[in-house]
Length: 388
Ligand SMILES: Cc1ncc(COP(=O)(O)O)c(C=O)c1O
Image (tube, rainbow, N blue to C red; front, side):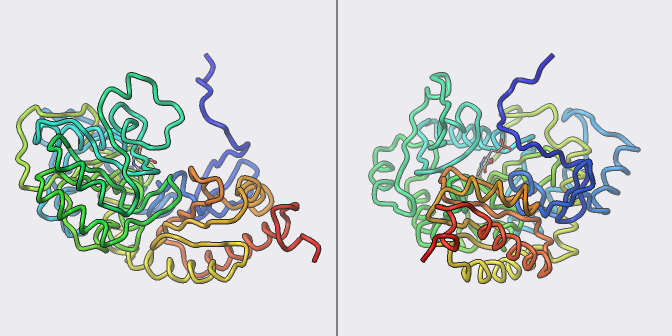
């Protein structure tokens, strides 16, 4: 059987990893400033993570959600404590898109409505309702477009107010920092205004923190810089540091009903062990503070590189905007400088999403390699090679 050939692949195969680095079969070292789509939060092959998963595997890997699982309760408690979201209840699922689907489901069950308000450049996943609320999907088959969705201007609420007054909105969904859309942070005033409007019109506000959550922005959740309290929060990616796990945090004011949703694999023993290890390492190693502090250092170094027009983002979730498409630069970085970086839906914007554990050494190394890659770029990309 062949693979269903969906992904354009780089011809590199990481076979091991340690901290901020991955290694291919020939032993070549790569600096990982992308973490496989913002997934590796605490670093590759963290010993505590390995130990927790191995120990759990020795005991039991899985049983269904029809029996007690005290690991789930322990994770919910730890997550509440570390994130400051103690007034929420945790629903476990297996991926980001599944978290978004369930968030919509809970919102629709609560309001009895089904229109979604989303924003330009939004990315919320590739499943039915999630892709419908995604602004950039090239492939949106009609089965995924059955529900009404509106895309509003980013960081503005004028048109949102008008829409909410119609009384047919099920939920407003917004990323704390837009990720795939090119790293656009939600302005605090925008989020505060959305939270206020949602409260007034009794419409659940869903914060999609799948990419920006778990410390990446320098706060546990990116929205926390705005001081708001969303009704529903979606999480995945960095939550499991590579173990497939997602979750929905639902504010206590929304009571659950038995059977309103569910998942075979959600919150299984291995997933819980992975999330617990991530939370413990984030706490013990001060990774949220590190993300904030090292993020500031990285940002200031990047701002001194003339080829970069704008540096956007917070913590270790940064977008570098160039005035040329970055595809060639990313290849140069990967194949000549051995650095992983990310693309975005904006051809000129590179995403920088390293592990939250990087230090000054990795910042310096990245800056050196980025400068070298920029110098090596053929014209017309590199201004330094254009004759005066
Ligand atoms: C903000 C956001 N929401 C949802 C998703 C979908 O997550 P998954 O690929 O785990 O389904 C992503 C994935 O990149 C994302 O960045």
